[in-house]
Length: 118
Image (tube, rainbow, N blue to C red; front, side, top):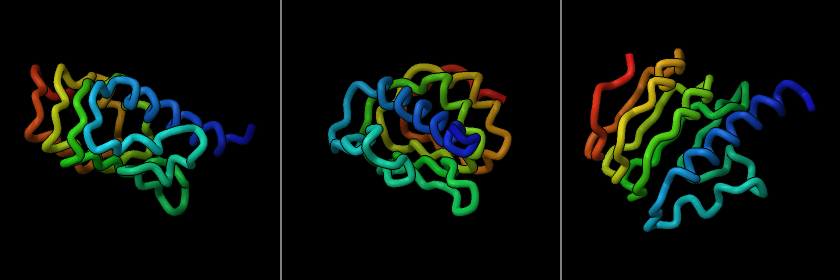
């Protein structure tokens, strides 16, 4: 397995972990989040043109209910994370602080509690 394949596999595993933490998906947005579809074609996922890694995750207004797993800290090329207007709950994992490229984050209108990771 090449390094690029390994990295995209990490991104895929990370997003499948997020999917497993979603208990309700009223709009069936995650139906194509499977190993039979390239993650760059998954609903809400945008990959970078050069590195073909997950650069943006936008599930805003899509209605899922669930929690955010610590695995999300593995999306090392993520620059944007938008989850606003959904029913996510619980605490935000400290592992989000690993996302050093992240420059856009929008979690408003969910049910998170606790403090934001630094």
